[in-house]
Image (cartoon, rainbow, N blue to C red; front, top):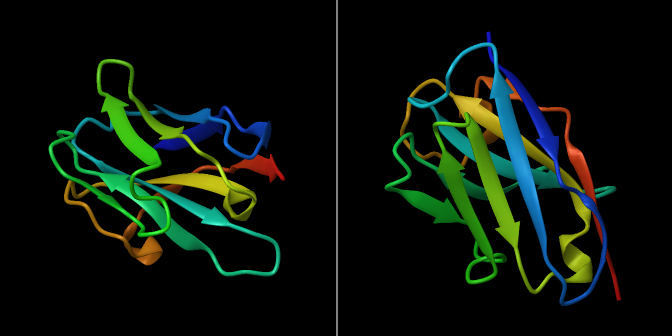
Length: 124
């Protein structure tokens, strides 16, 4: 079983940056693909970014391309989401998710494990 814990969320002004971390425990996720999703109040959960098991393949939602960067450190069993040029519309609870198949996918239902989420609030 894999447990995922997100951290790094908080309150930031528009134009600022945050780096989210997704730390895995229970087993190594070095062969897993990992994704970040977010859910704003009153809205459906949406895909943000994903990274393959090796880090060689990434994918991003159009709304965050050029501003967010997903990366991973398999020696630390951790995946990161660097968020720059934040906008108020980025405000949401951010979740990381892992799937045992290491290929990048953007559909949430294809992920096996989920964290509890971390709140990101961007003020204007």
